[in-house]
Image 1 (cartoon, rainbow, N blue to C red):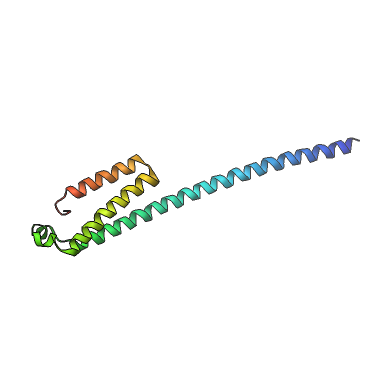
Image 2: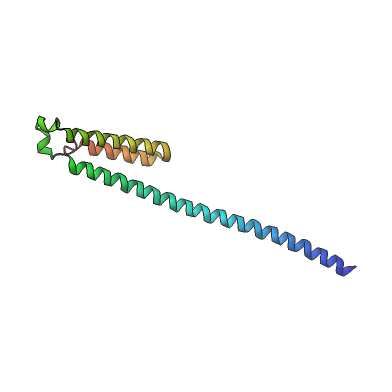
Length: 125
């Protein structure tokens, strides 16, 4: 009788230990998954920032220099108008991307201050 009860008790204890090990495993898996997702999000944000930077640089390389902007003929140039439109489209895209996806007021504030300072410089229109 005693051995049967001990066997039952051992089975119950091993079942309880199994449940705790399973719960611990699930918690560890969730923690690892959340860390990986955070890393992937950071990488994605850096890639997005790099893409925006590359696109801005391409636009700025194709716009005329400051001295040329004083000439009204250059502002009527189709290529200049196209790059100006692309520039403002890119600004809008970046603004809506940050407000929609990130909803991070600190990042949005930095972006808005950066756009304001970039547009206030003479070299940018």
